Figure 1: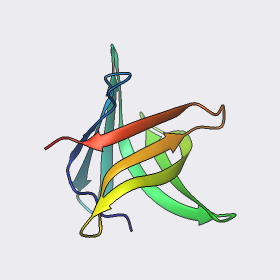
Figure 2: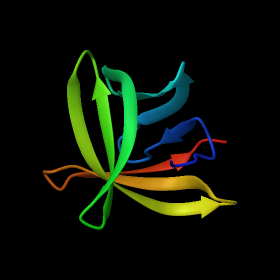
Figure 3: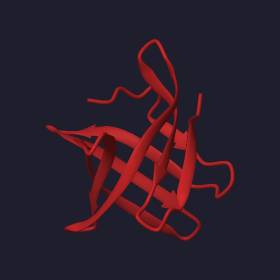
Figure 4: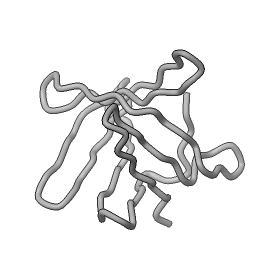
Length: 96
């Protein structure tokens, strides 16, 4: 399982934020952008030599992103990239 250095991560280009939290036994995630919000759970899978972050939100909507750790400190992810099936990508960095 991924270990994150912070609960909050920010994308400087878009202004999006991602917050990771524990919701009972599930790993919660909230992704906010300008005028929208996705709230749900996340899971990590490894397929075809890649790491994927699977995000289920807003009552059964699912998205899958290639997850790439860009920087880690003491085993915790400080910066990461998400890439979707349309080759769009977002780089997030921990907010301290």
